[in-house]
Image (tube, rainbow, N blue to C red; front, side):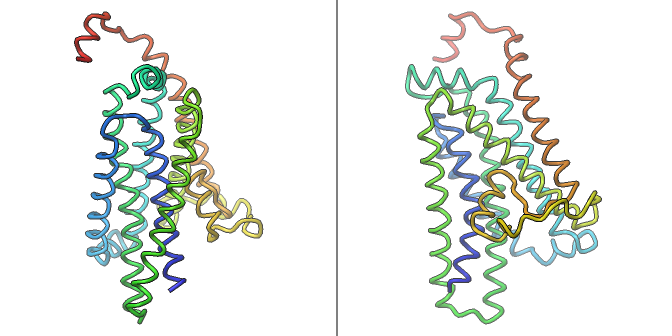
Length: 283
């Protein structure tokens, strides 16, 4: 039972951390609960479908289908997170002013939420499909019904609890620093997902390793530990990274930071409607 609970906990933790960061980053945006809840529901439905088609996915593309599927999901999430942080760089101050003066975010925030709904769905899709496949394998291997019934809820509750703790911790950040802090976390999250996607592509022989192991910090903090797993999601920690993973990680950080710095300049150059037109649009 404890083994099942631990493995489910790790998978749920990965999805819960991503959902928590997304929820915190969209603080004050109207209807964000619907978007995030919808993303979780879509991801869960997709995970069940993926599990049902696991055999076909595994055998696709010369037996590398699962690795390519995982890499595709992760890279799609990276693109959507990247779009959000660049968008927030040009609209974050406007959102903060609106939250301080009126108590809720401007309606424009919902356009970015649509992208983050997909990020939530992809996170739940990937981790949920792994949970379903893992439980199926455990049941086929002779795991008792009692172990599954007791272990799965324990793992789900534990992973969700850690996610909630992160979420409420982020909400304690002062509002004037909130969007910068959450944007920074999303940049590191995207870089970590890009690094993980690179590892899957390397396993499928689609990318060269450029050095199979640059260093090994497993003795200090292993990938399999709970803390290592959490840091892997939050900042892209890997105890044994390859060269190509480091290239993708640093490239993602560089591209997003550059985009975040350029976005406000382009936003400032765009013509703005006069105050009376803006008030009519808001109404």
